[in-house]
Amino acid sequence: LQWIFNNYSTTAIQPGHHSVLIAGTSQATAHVSGVVALMYSIDGNLAPGIIRTVLQSNADDICFGVPACIPKEGAGRLNALHVLQHTP
Figure 1 (spheres, rainbow, N blue to C red):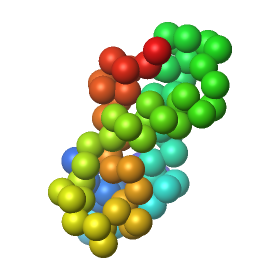
Figure 2 (cartoon, rainbow, N blue to C red):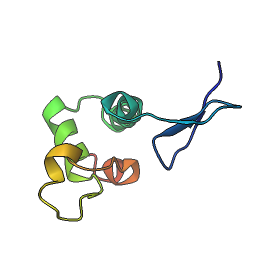
Figure 3 (cartoon, helix red, strand yellow):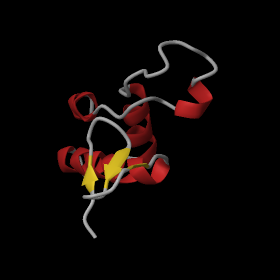
């Protein structure tokens, strides 16, 4: 079974079939884990609290200041470049 994942949305396409919407924390886990691994490559002694703070404070705002959106979307979209630039 082969799937094609689109980096610009949460749509996966199985060849020869219609697109399937996939979303949620399970879709973000691999991305966040990879960025955390890169953070550890900069400093292998980072404390979990520092990692959380750097990840959250460098996320892209996808709610554009709309308060009702924030509980649903959390800190925003992961921005790996900003996270790595601000890793102590």
